[in-house]
Structures are given as structure tokens and as C-alpha cells.
Image (cartoon, rainbow, N blue to C red):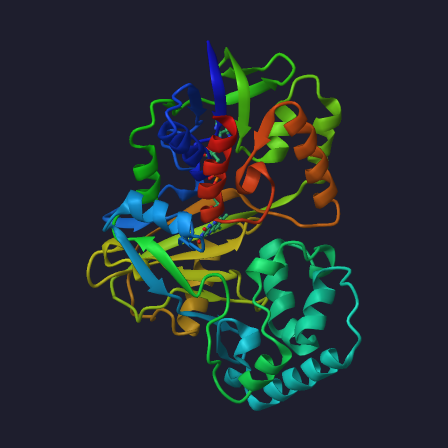
Length: 424
Ligand SMILES: Cc1cc2nc3c(=O)[nH]c(=O)nc-3n(C[C@H](O)[C@H](O)[C@H](O)COP(=O)(O)OP(=O)(O)OC[C@H]3O[C@@H](n4cnc5c(N)ncnc54)[C@H](O)[C@@H]3O)c2cc1C
């Protein structure tokens, strides 16, 4: 069998590439997906009448095309929501972002944060060597110690000293020194961050977007796993059968893809330099509607999780009336089981997020094996070398895992368009 374009992986990136190829009248492609359903990390699940995403999956749309496409696909099935997010430290509940809401801290910590910031601002700025330097220069030591260090250590599974700052531009709000100082006396006048407002499907969870993209794709093949790719011969093994192609699009995790390459030992070796984190998600529902919020960050070491989201808060259709559903994100190294469940629930009760009298209706665990590509010092060179070499061999890598970067759903949608334009 031969196709003009073979797309590996029907997550949002692969689906968007196929969707845009079809829009341009090109049906000579095959979109291979290992799972029974398309969608990858954006697929949603219905459990006992509740809709769950894979942790939180909210649409952050910042481009005209991204908004236009999502509105075209979801039509009236779309909500626009304002972020309601906090950080719980051992002493306080601070609105997100921490660094722009110092007013919410106890007086002693607030004063220390102000002094630390002033000290940092008085230094001559130097090129940061790592994310720790970047935080210390941007916010001062107390903000770093209270939030940035412990939270990011949990999230990335390593010290901020081991991370570069290539990723933080779009993801870590950086108010000016003056704005941070002002925030010590009053709440900020503006919203910070890429996620201050977001979109979410009214019904069907994030998976509604997947369904809308996938519904008329002629070349989508689920239960189709790729195991080997030969870039010289331009062939791939799908479910044990060989298929040839003119162009290849990879959205699979880059290290896995590099290991699938035939006769490319040097490229495969680059995979050893790429590390990532996994996320363990504890999903549960209770028999009471809690006060709405979007998500809450937990930097403190004694809390086993680092973020908790209210799934039922994103849409009234996500949970039956009078109930609430939550997702709790923990480092992927945390053991699943009763012990962890008990620690999670008692920490949530202690913080007043749920009540001791609430009944847990059901719960289930999910592991997301690929969560964050770790931006350590070896990543950027290895990724650059791999992507350049692959592009020379006619293989385009795309998406958060194909390009081994920190990106989000809108980027997947736009990359799909970009690929289709290149390929047609
Ligand atoms: C915890 C977490 C929370 C997130 N929250 C948000 C959010 O709120 N908003 C946002 O915009 N983004 C969020 N993201 C990012 C978002 O999930 C990704 O940017 C997006 O889903 C990437 O889509 P993709 O198609 O590139 O990759 P994936 O979704 O990983 O798709 C890859 C596909 O390849 C398939 N595959 C793998 N191996 C094979 C094989 N051998 N053969 C065939 N198929 C294979 C997989 O089954 C999968 O379907 C979050 C990510 C994580 C981890």
C-alpha cells in the first residue's frame, strides 16, 4: 500500500493535519492511531454519568484562526470561562499568579517578599544560567522559596537549577517590579497569564473537539500501531504490514519515534538525551456541589499532589446536578492505591476543598505516561539535531511530543494547518 502522506498519531495534532489536508481537497493520506479512539491526551471519558478529561484540558485560544476554527467545529457547544485559580501554601490562600498577589500573604511573608524583590531589582541583570536564576532575578528569593521552587520541583521532578528557561516565557507570568510591589498592598488591576480566560466545550468535555475534528476524516485508522519506520526506503510497519509514503508526519513522542527508525543509530542515540515526566491523576466525584473554582496549585512538600481541578466547574454538563467531580495531579512516581488516596482526601478536607461529611461516589486513577518534556540542559541541542536531521529526510515532527516541547492545544491545531499547507 502507498499513500502520499502518512501521519503517525491521531491526537489533536495528527487530527488537525488530516482535517486541514481534507479541507484542501487532499485525501491521499493515512492517519494511524494505536488506540481504539482518536484524540490522544484530548480524549474525554464518561464514567457513571460524569465527563472526565485527562486531568484538565482547557482551550487557551490566542489567535484569530484558533478561535475561528474552534468556533466553526463546536458551534454553540462552547463556553468562555474566567480563571478562578489559587495557590495554597502552608500559611495562605493566594490568588494566581502568586507573584502578582502578595497582598494575600501574612504580613511577615509579604514584607520578606517585598524586600527580596527590591534586592533582586537592585542587582545588575545577568543572563540566567537556569530557571532558578531566572526566578531569583524576576521575583526575588522569598517568592522563589515560597512558591516557584517547591511547585516547579514537584511539577518537573527536578530542581529548577536543572532546568533552562527556554520554556517559561509564555507560561510563567512576569509582572514588572512595580506591579509586584503594588500587589503587596492591593489586588492587581489586571489579569496575568495565558490562561486568564479560556474556552471549554459545553457538552462532551475536551473530547467534543476531537469528535468534531475526526468525524469526516476518510484516512483515520484506529487500532493501528506503527512499530518501525525506514526513512531511506520511505516505508513504515503498521500492525505488521508495510506501507510506503512520500511524506511522513510524526506526532508520537520523539524519543519513541527515534527508537523506531531503521538504520539510524546516530539519531536513535539522541533519544537517550531526552527525559520527561509522567502524571498520575486521581479522579473522583462527591455527592455535593462545591463552590466553583477552576484549579488550585499546591507547592508544599507535605501535599502529595501539585494541582487540583474542579472538572464539574468547567461545564454544568460535566457532572449531574448536586454533585462535584475533581482531578488531582500527582508526580508520576507516586504509588497508586489506598494509602495515597487517603492522603489526598485528608489533605483536601484539611484545606476545606471538600468536607469530611462528603461522600465519595467513585474514584479512578489514570497515568499519563508523557506529560512534560523536561527542559534540562541536554534537551535543546538534542531536539534541534533530531528535528533538523528528520526534516532533511522528509519527516516533519509536530505537536507537544513530536517536537518535544511545552505547548498546548491551540499550537496543535495551528501546526496541523501549517503541515497541510506544506504538504499540499
Ligand atoms: C497533564 C496535562 C494537562 C494539559 N492541559 C492542557 C490544557 O489545559 N490546555 C491545553 O491547551 N493543553 C494542555 N495540555 C497539552 C495538550 O494535551 C497537548 O498539547 C496536546 O494534547 C498534544 O496533542 P498531540 O496530538 O500532539 O499529542 P497526543 O495527544 O499525545 O497524541 C499522540 C497520539 O499518538 C498515538 N500513538 C502513540 N504511539 C503510537 C504508535 N506507536 N502508533 C500509533 N499511534 C501512536 C497516541 O495514542 C496518541 O493518540 C496538557 C497536557 C498534559 C500532559
